[in-house]
Length: 420
Length: 119
Picture 1 (cartoon, chains in turn blue, cyan):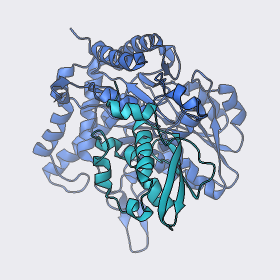
Picture 2 (tube, helix red, strand yellow):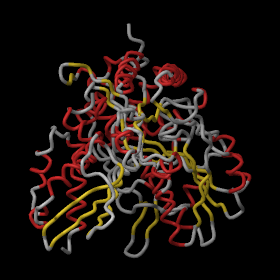
Picture 3 (cartoon, chains in turn red, green):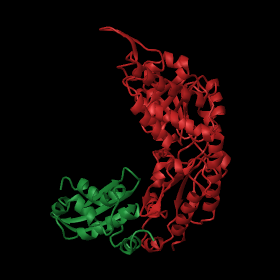
Picture 4 (cartoon, chains in turn purple, brown):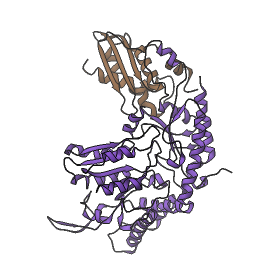
């Protein structure tokens, strides 16, 4: 029997055959597949409870509102917060942009924002836009094993540093950053502490801590539908912030020239919200709770450990990030050295070539074997620059992957590796 | 192994690879999506290309496409190359290209069109 944590049978997409064979999906860092339980919840919402929320007074609208708000409570229980501290957004990117356009706007010339060189563009670009008003963006570096340089962080944490925004788990290196410790340092410095938890909340037990001011993550990366994301914010901070979008639903009272906004979190949810998304995310959380987040984490650790040890045996394959699975998640960025005679041919004519296979070529090669990995810069170009590569291929795991997927991946990769 | 023999042979033995010392036009094209960096060197006589070569780094598809492009451009009018149909260009590539890789094959034609806009 194949050892999968969440049963593969729960995921209808794995019935799909390509060229008559099963697919090996190793791109859950980009988005996850959806179990039937999530799809059923969405359909049953539309079939049995669809109405606009927070508005009308009839029974169906009450039911829709209750489902939406129960979903919010399920999310808050899952991360250990209060339910009025959970704002529904479209995704992590929108959650972080919300912060940039609210607390970010209150920053002044000379203020600093501290992020790291291993951030996804979604935790770089919302802050970079503030450089136009004279805010300085600092980056904490990492060592050759992909560990964040805490000494560097300490030296860059200055009295001007108003915001510290850090990924909990890198979407490329897999590195799990010590956010509790970093959060304490940020709070001692009176900085706002923000966590990009897009790759951590879906994959490990996550509990809210006093030092976390804001936490952002996406539903689609944790078995939920696309288009639903979460921003956790400390209530008093959400209360002090201006709204991000304005319009329907988020007001208490509107006159011709004045408005009183609703309390958080509704203040930040202008317009008709993504109710099906919230309901689907809630069903995804129920599914994950049935497995248990400790089990999700240990399952991924096991798959990652087997994969890393196998990759270490392939002499032309390089992987990035920590070697110890205790320090990393189930995402593995890698490259394969091109050992064909290209080098010999071209070096004779003093032509410089990149001796690594291009990551797109690796991904196309694996695609031919029905093994689906991501390739390119993974929305983390500054990180690629730090690694000194133009891109990497990347395999990542989730609850539905089993050791059979690892074997299919490693076997395919070894064929590429062996070519002389 | 990867792609077919024609593509792999061209990748390993490109015929138009190398920097041109004396050129009339140099086109720098850095692909925005995947970090490929290709430079085209053109020698022209009026509106006609007398020689073209390339230098740079890229995936197998962009390198092979660029090398084929340089070779086939010799003795052609710049205007005729620019008027090429993009779909036909992709279809003429030695192997079938999946939608996700069309940009790799299109790299030289896009660079050429951009770099010879004023010519």
